[in-house]
Length: 367
Image 1 (cartoon, rainbow, N blue to C red):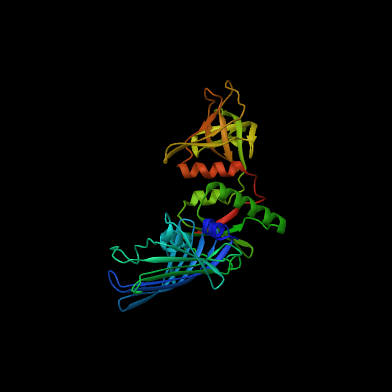
Image 2 (image 1 turned 90 degrees about the vertical axis):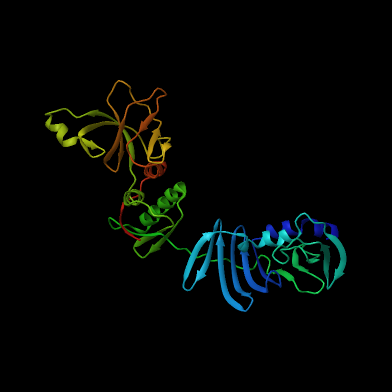
């Protein structure tokens, strides 16, 4: 690879790898003496582990960082504290920031590596911009990958070095997880191995649609769900239910009809609103469900099924319970209200979007 080819796209090649290892170290005397050294692993696209120390004047502290997506974890004693991710766990951005917008000038070959010089921009080394820093990028001529970035002033009162290696063989990064809620779920009846696997598959589909920050694990004959944010008991119970969602043509129960008293369902638990189910209009995977949320506390579920506007109400039924009743709108859509908050309605929509589980799960929620 020619020097021009290697220098022009070196950092972009690094970003296309599956993983790489790195060491980052720097020291400076401004605005006070500070020294940092880290070793780490970057697993693309966005997982990183950083282990090292920081010395400020005479105080030395151990630092352990992990990062994934928008989250960063810092170890405090035996606890991992989660915060919003910063530049300190973005090695690609830190490295590129040293030479972004600068001209890379080919300076020759040394120790089998192409050398490119540039005028670095590193406020962490020189916050007052009083030092005259010079930078060097070393690139492997065969792979075109950067292997070293080094920046310093002539007296070496400030030095910054990033070394890169173990390209595509640095291994995976394990990110800690501190749940806000832990859910233990056990099948309501004994499930075969195939049934249990099918239930887990459906749960994963529901969770993916909801976009919850979570981890689902199998623990023997049960499941453990770790949730990043608290959820209501009802939402969790719905999530682990069979999830048999149907929209029925119904009629209001007659007064004094003994058969209606046996067959009728209370709508939303209201004894004054009782319906008899007449005909199934559509079920799981057939409803074209959409969540309509004017406010987070007042959301409605919109479905698309053919319903007679001269008959009785359409009824939303989940696992044999009538949650809501609605009449057709002007556009032929059905809008079911009084289900609950926007999060409640989104869980029902997630149930409707996929198939039913062979059995529901009994859940226990632990903070």
